[in-house]
Image 1 (cartoon, rainbow, N blue to C red):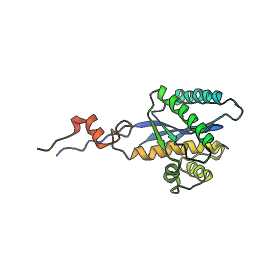
Image 2 (tube, rainbow, N blue to C red):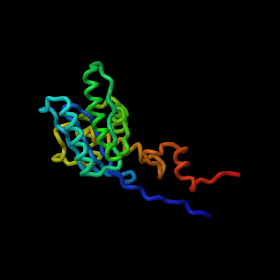
Image 3 (tube, one colour):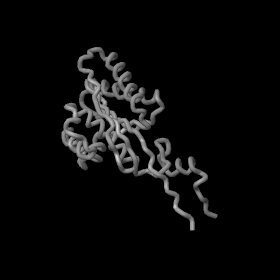
Image 4 (cartoon, rainbow, N blue to C red):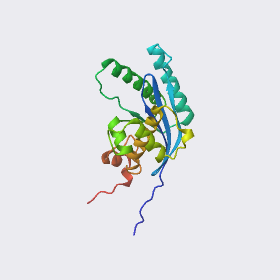
Length: 197
């Protein structure tokens, strides 16, 4: 009788990004199986920078600093939501694009999640407030009161990383961000697949 092959869960570092043009949040999680632990959270405060392109440069520079400091295996970023103000959407899209470019320059796989999906994954309610998301993150990750930040962008970024943790832990062992389907898994792991006669 063949024994079932057990694979130990792989430790991953996940960087979560909550894009913003004035304040951009980031959160770093260590993910191991079903467990997640906060390594860091913070914000990139750009409110004193008036030049749009200088802001983008600062975002790129600071995201690279976070990446080089924590060496994440994956990055999860919140997708821009559709609003009525086209100029605001354009600015937000640029900020998100610069953060994505920083991850691409370090060969980090990127996943994008809609705000509704993140809130649903964390609180069970797609219409949850930022305060509710922060309270859930504090409870789930056992963050002490003194380690909480006044910026909800930081806990939003943690929520993005935690949503990615929840989504990817349900995947098959061996399914990386580049192998998202059975077809990809079979192609990558042909030696593990038996064909019927």
